[in-house]
Image (cartoon, rainbow, N blue to C red):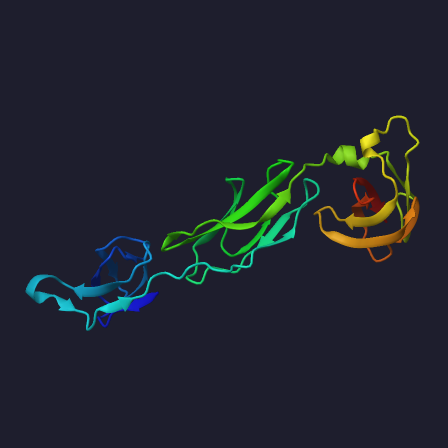
Length: 259
């Protein structure tokens, strides 16, 4: 809440509050110079009052009125949403919450209690996430003049790091031609003796193509249990991409070049 004192701007104003209200994030008394507005917040969530004065003793000029203050608003129903959970190391973790009604200095994002990012808005886009594997919990805390909000549960995520070199030479998938211009064929290779059973795919139920930033550029779903599919890549820009094949349980990726 912003409070304005009916006092001249070109003075040092001393502000005082009751019930522990913070003045620009500071405890009472607090002084401002060449300014007659401050932000008042209640760290305890209770009401109080604020007053302002210029000078001291019998020469003091008091602000016209003591301003009543309402406690900080709770952060209710922030609509936490996980927009994208990365599948390999270069992809971003993207999430969003509605911003705190009191206006937050920052939003701190945690995975199982470990701080991974601090943002100025309720939108998270980060590549700096730990390789944890297993389902983990993403939480966010709003930092306001009132203090820190209670943690908001954004959702459960799975963060597994993928090895680029391993994915680039994945023998469970065949791509041809590679480099490709307009069309690329994707087929399964379950015959090789060097392929682990856990890496084998039973069919191609879905493919997704990612660019080097981990952004999905194309996604296709196949109703039948295909072992080979044809994909139109004519609308992709020239560059390096990763194609991900999913059979409903297992995902495998391989790199290709669009020329």
